[in-house]
Each structure stands twice: as structure tokens, then as C-alpha cells.
Image 1 (cartoon, rainbow, N blue to C red):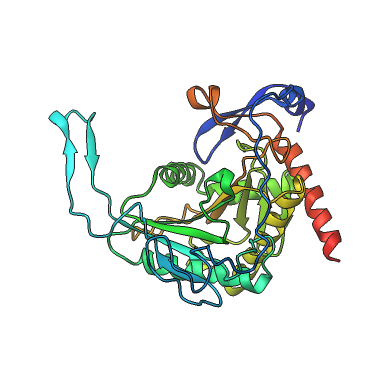
Image 2 (image 1 turned 135 degrees about the vertical axis):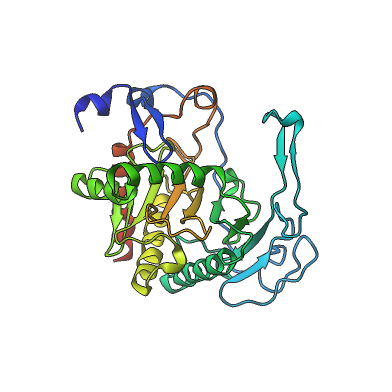
Length: 350
């Protein structure tokens, strides 16, 4: 990277969403008098009798959570989507302006572990591997349904990112149509393959592994990096080294490697500001619409909000809402910070 792009305002192209991101490195020196957040203390008990996700407890909707000992999946008691909605569409005066249509789907909750006081960062590798296995099973089952075109697996970690319960868990939403974000990525990847006869993210990963500036962690099967076009301060993109489009198609070694890199990056996050790091994380597999999708490479996004301390977060407001995405610290600087945090965690476990 030339010094100009590390020190001066510039914009970077996001080929996955086909949009520009403004980068303003000089703004990290500005004073902060805005909102600060309370730091979240991790749960201190392995079992919480008031937690509806702990084994043996009654959930908020009145259903009983069994005494599970590994992972546990159930239909969301307050699901955003339902499987039995009657098909209907609306287009007032056929103008294409006031349009609506019904959307079928299923929403499930996946408890990662029976222990209330754990996270992906503190779970052991076999436990995280079981989560990866359950993701694959759920994606295969839900994706085989004829009415489902996309399976979105995600985790909201921490109250700052809207998590309603600190118990380690994530969600799985299966939708009748491809949601907005994967649809944007689909169009970009299709266009790139048509134009270059190559896979967009595989070509991008090859460049990143040559430059090394933004790589945070890697193993034999996966690479975690701060994308060149990152919007969130410590955003991560996790990519498989070998071509695979869906999580259920991962080999045993790829599943092992995914579990390992998830533990490494989430533990590193916690060391950046020495606080439980909030984030939204999600998998982006190819659509399950019956097409082969050779253009698609499976990947994971991490979107953490913390900016300059455990109590100062990034807000997507003003110019970000009305103009373009914008960030202050460069992706290269963020990657260096995360690598240093990863080294701390490695030294502590030796």
C-alpha cells in the first residue's frame, strides 16, 4: 500500500456489493464526546435458573428446554417467518411502486453449548466443531425444502448487537427468496465469473495471501482477514482455501479448520480492548435454489461495532446512511491490531 492510501482520505471498491467505501485515516485523532457504552461482564455461572436457553428451563414462550448436553436446536418461539403463509401479492395500479408479497420461511435457534458462561471464544474445539456440524445439518435439511431458496445462519453476540440472551446461541433463518445482501453478492459474483471466467472471492483471496497486509489468521483450510473494503472497524471476512460453496459440502478437515479459526478470531477479538467483544457474524453460502453456483465461494462475515475502546462504538449514521459507508482506521491498521491480539492469546495458552 502506498503511503497516500494509509494516511489520506480515499475510497475503496467493494466488489462483493459493488459500492465504494470512504476511508478517513486522519479522523482517528478527533476527540470523542459522544455516547459511550457500558462494558458487558460475561456471565459468571454455568447454569442460570432464569435463562430460558439453559437446559431444563422453561422458555419465554412457555415451551420447555430439555436437559441437552451438546447443541440444541428448536423452532423460534417468536419467529419472524412462518412456513404456512398463503401465497399472495400486491401491486397497486400495476405501477411497481406499492408492491408486497408474502414470504414463507422458518426461524430456528441453535444453542451452542449447555453452559451459560461460555462463548465461541471460550468453548473448547470439540464443542465448536459440534456447532459447525449442526450448522451443516441444518443447512442441508432446510435447504432441501422446495419452498426455501436461502438458509442464513448467524449469531448476534452481546447486548450492543441486539442479543437478547447471553447464553451462547445463534439463529438460522430459511427464506422463500434470497435476501438482499446475498442477492447483491450473487449478482457481483455471477458478473465477475462471466467477465473473468474466475471466482471473485477465490481470486481476491489469492491476492490477499500474496500481499499479507490484511490477513489476521490462517490454517490449512481457512483464512481470516480484514477485507480491503471493510466498513466496520474490526470487520473480518473468513474464506476457505479450497473451493466450496455450501457449508454442508465441507470436508471433515475443512470443518475442523473452521472450528479452529472461529475460536482463534473470537478469542483475539476479546483481547483487542480486554472485553467480551460484541459482533454480528453470519455465513454466506450459495443459494439453495437448485442451481450449481460455480461462481460462489462460501464465506463468513464478522461485523463488530467497537471502534476505539470497549465503550466507544461506530455508528452508521449521517453520511453512512445518506451517502456512502465510511471508516476511520484503515483495514491494514485493524488487521495489525487483531494480529497483535491473536499473539497475546497464543502466548497465554502456551
